[in-house]
Image (tube, rainbow, N blue to C red; front, side, top):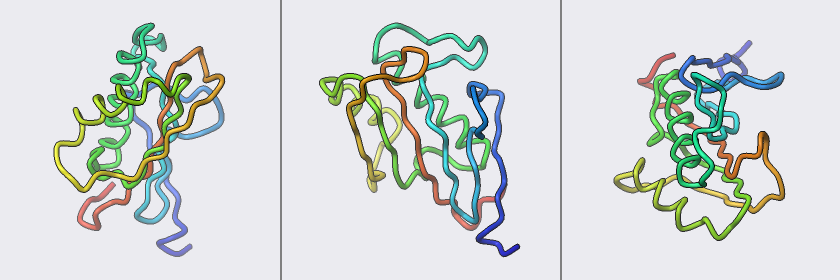
Length: 137
């Protein structure tokens, strides 16, 4: 197996347990694919709150904890895909992301409105991280 085809599952207790047959993240070469996160509290499996702002913050906390499990941070993300039940919450998304990104270059991002998300979530986000070759898992 070559370095670029090696696959390693990433797991942390500081993000919700996967609810299906998938990993919290998968490292392939120097790229890490983070599974979509919703606003679940890892300790209880319950939604962090009923409002989109609380859920968004928990989503990014969950993603940050998965990123830490592979020796990275959210600043290392190359791309986010965001799924919102209501695209009117786009300004709140920018507000929450500013809490995690203090300086450019910002990651690429796609945001789409969807009709339904798991467990009645209002937002879901997945990410792609490109690891610095100095970082090790």
